[in-house]
Length: 187
View 1 (cartoon, rainbow, N blue to C red):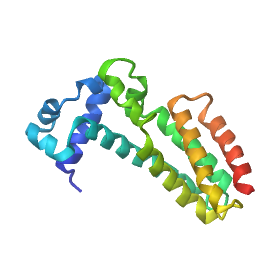
View 2 (tube, rainbow, N blue to C red; view 1 turned 45 degrees about the vertical axis):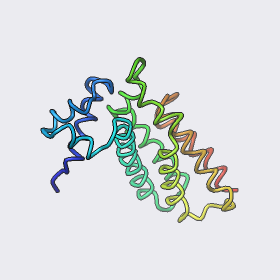
View 3 (tube, one colour; view 1 turned 90 degrees about the horizontal axis):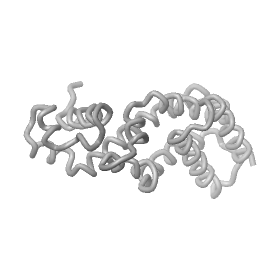
View 4 (cartoon, rainbow, N blue to C red; view 1 turned 135 degrees about the horizontal axis):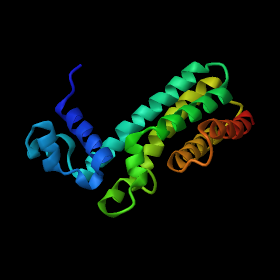
């Protein structure tokens, strides 16, 4: 399936961000990289903040595919599915160039992307929580429905925290989060 102009622009923005930082991403530079007019870039992706959000949400979709694959691999054991998904997400995160470019930005305009993963992460958190809720529900966890959403929210926020600032290996963190989630979901 051929890439759309929009896809090519977003790919170019990711490449520029990972190689030169977000400050190096301009609509003119993207136009040159992709071989289209500056107006076409604006028409396809909107403003630079809209482009940033699109890049982050598309990367989130790749992370959520990792979660789906982990749950698919553990259809009979919810705690093991959570552990595997946390391990796989943290492993994927450790090698993710865009994530590293966002998290390691420490000055000037490069810090514009960081709030999309932290203080302004509402759409990211909602999307991730939706996937976790959908994947957990078939296991019929022994928890009241009213408590399932806060439990999923807790897991997503803790995993995001470890994506941003790991404190142990993916394996150890996965085991720890799965243990905690297992205790919550069993009651």
